[in-house]
Image (cartoon, rainbow, N blue to C red; front, side):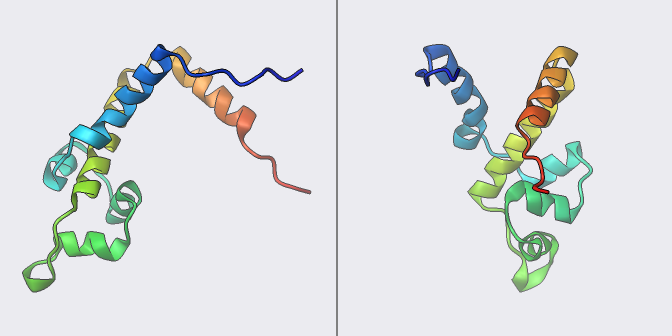
Length: 110
C-alpha cells in the first residue's frame, strides 16, 4: 500500500534551507579550500562541476590564467561544509544514509 505524498513541513523547509544556504551566501576561495583539503585537479573539476581544462587555467600563469567564478566558489564552500559536517555526523546517521542508498540504488537489468 503506497502512502499519499505529503507536503513538506516548516521543519523540512528549514532543514533544506540550512543545506542550501552555502550556495546562496557563502563562497570559498580556491586557496582556502586547498589549505583544508588535499584534492586533485580532477576532483576539483568534479566538485565545481566544470572541465579539467578550466581547473588547469586556475593554476596557470600569464594571459590564460582564470579565477574561479562565483558558482565555483559556492560549490567549494558547499563541499567544505558537507565534508566538515560529515566528520561530526553521528554514526547512526551514517548507517541510515548507507541503508537508504542501498535501498534506492537501481539494480542492473539482467
